[in-house]
Length: 252
Image (cartoon, rainbow, N blue to C red; front, side, top):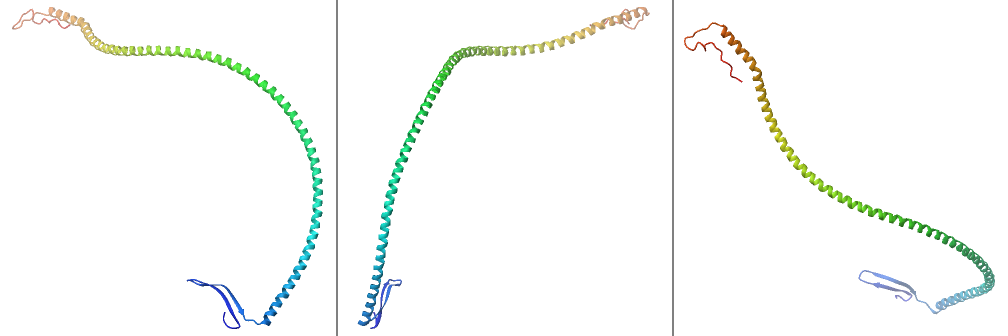
């Protein structure tokens, strides 16, 4: 505070960074007359405010009484309505219970009829299933018998297949032997064909010489006749009987 006529009251927060003013009040010096006048004004204001509050309170009480009366009437009406509602609810519940009982009876009757129909259908289904089961059992017995027959047939066929395999192996061995024998026979046939070809050539040559023999004999005979008919000639040396006599052909 500074001076005699007034001052300032400040609340300051000071730290390393700044000074922060929280509050700053301007104060003035006063005497008794001013203080009394100020206080009288404040009392007058409070009295006026009190009268206003009393009038407002009175008005509020009157409004509260009116609201309380209205609330009592509303509660009475609500009570009456609740009683009417309870009577109506009881009546509605009674009628609803009667309707529910009737519907329950109808539902029970429908359920009994449905149960009877379901029982009849169940019996029919059981009868049909038993008939089908009997038929299936007979079919199963027949199938089992056929299966045993097929199993026996399978065993017989397997035995036949085994025998045929053995025979096939034996036949394959025989075929192998016959193939080797055939190859040997073919080789022999080729040798025989070669020998036959040589024999044929020899026979052909012999036939050619044999067919040429008559012609050679005829030629020799003609030459001999010509020699016999021709006069004898003598040479300086040699046998006159052998001179000019053709020699027979020795080729065969």
